[in-house]
Amino acid sequence: MQYRSDFLVIGSGLAGLSYALKVAPHGTVNLVTKRGIMDTSTRQAQGGIAAVLSPEDSFDLHVKDTLEAGDGLCHPDIVELVVHQGPERIRELIEMGAHFDLRSMSADSYDLTREGGHSKRRIIHAHDMTGEEVERILVNRVLEHPNIKVFENHIAVDLITRHKLLRRGAVVTNAEESCLGAYVLNIDRGEVETYVAPIILLATGGASKVYIYTSNPDIATGDGVAIAYRAGALIGNMEFVQFHPTCLYHPLAKNFLISEAVRGEGGILIDKRGIPFMEKYHPLKDLAFRDVVARAIDTELKKTGDDCVFLDISHKPADFLRSRFPGIYQKCLDLGIDMTKEPIPVVPAAHYCCGGVVTDAVGRTTIHNLYAIGEVSMTGLHGANRLASNSLLEALVFAHQAAQHSIELLPQMRPLDLSEVLDWNPFGAVDSDENVVVSQNWEEIRRFMWNYVGIVRTDKRLIRAKHRIDLIQQEIDEYYWNFLITSDLVELRNLALVAELIITCALKRKESRGLHYNLDYPHKDEANWQRDTVVSLAR
Ligand code: SIN
Image (cartoon, rainbow, N blue to C red):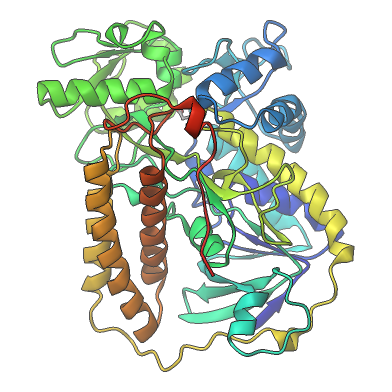
C-alpha cells in the first residue's frame, strides 16, 4: 500500500502537531503516530513552558540562564532565537484556546512558576498538567483539519533515501541525498506500508526508555534518532541524558514525575532522617541545575544505602497544594501518600535527551528535505544540560521555523516519480516463534544502561556497556532480517541503536560537563572539548 502527501509528519506530540497545523494550509499532510494520537511525552509534561512574560524578566536573563545550564555547549544564536520567539509562540497557543493558570482574575496576569536554574519566575503552566492542556487543544484542531490525515498505531520502520534505493538497484536520476518517504508498519494489520512525500518531518520525541528507571512514557524509544542515523543523518551530543531528580518512588508508580515546580514552590529534599542535604552541594540548594541535584541524590543514596530520598512541601497550606498540584496530589493520594501532610519518596530517573538529530536554525537535518524538531533533535538550544521547561518552548519555536522553511521548499521539490520508490520487501521473513529474544534484550539493555551509563560514569563501565551492546545488536540484527517485523522488534532495534550512540558519544568525551559526568575525567576540558560530539553512519 502506498500513501502520498505533500508533508509526512512522524509523531504527534507538541512539535509534530504544531508543525502539521502550520503547513496544512499549504498542502496535504499525512501524520503517522505509533500509538494513539494523545500517547506522547508532551501529554505527560507537568512543569510548563518557559518564556519571558513578566515585566520583571528579560530576554537577556532567559538567555543567560539557558547558557549557564548548557555549560558551554549551547549555540548562542539558537538560544537567542528561541528565547525571543517565546512570547509570540505562547500567544498563538492561547489564541487557539489553551488555558494557563492566572495569578488573579485579570485575563493576562499569568501565574508564572519557577524551576531549577531560572533566575526569575517565567514558567507558564496549566496547574501541573500543562502538556495535557496543549496536547488536547492541538489534537482537536488537527483532527478537524481537512488537509491532515492521521494514522494511529503506525510506527515508522525506516526512511526511504535515494542512496538506499541506489544500493538496492533501483534506477534514480539524481543521487543527491534526500528522503523520499518512510516505510511504516501498520501495527493492526501487521503490514509495512510506503509513505511518500517531498517533505518529511521527524517529531518522534525522546529515548529515555533506554534506561530502566525513567519518567518517560513507553513510546520514548528513540525511533527518530535511530531511523535518521540509519539514513545517514548526523547525530550529536547523545551522551547528554538528563536525569530528573524527583520521580515518585513507589512499587505501583510507573514513570511518575514529581514536577520540579514542587521545589520551585518551596519543596525541600530531605533524607529519611528528615535532614535537608542540598545545601552541602550547591548555593542554590534545591533549585540548583538538574544535573547537580540528580548527582547529589545519587551520592546520598550511595552513601547511605537508602532506596530513596524525600521531597517535603507539607509546610505549605494544604489548599494551595491541592489547587496548584492537583495531578501530583491525587496520584500520591491514590498510593497512600498525602503530600499535604508527609514527604514524598523520590529517586532520579532518565528524563530527557539533550542530544539527537543535528539540525540548523530551521530544523533541517543534514539530509535534504528531512526536518527534525522537538526532543528528537539537537538544535543547539540545550547544550550539555537543558534548562527546565525550555523543551516545550523549543518544540513550539522549531515547529514554526521548520514550517516556514518547508512551505518555501515545497514548490522547489521536483515531483516524485513513484516508480522510484520500491515497496517494502520482507525477503522471505517468517513469523517468529521466539519472542523471548525481544523481551530478554529489552530488559538487559535498559538495566546495563542504568548501571554503566547512568548519572555517574567511568571509562571501565562504558567499555563494559559497549561490549554488551555490540553482542546484543548482532543478535537483534540476525533476528530482524529473518522474522516478520513487529512494533516490539522495531522499538528494540531502535533502542539498541540509541544505546550504542549514547555509549559511543560518552566514550568520546574525555571530560565531565553538564549531564555527562565521568569519574576518570572529573573536570571540564575547555581547550579540547568545548564542542559537540557528532557521529554518523560511515558509508
Ligand atoms: C518538571 O515538571 O519537573 C519537568 C519539566 C521539564 O522537564 O522541563
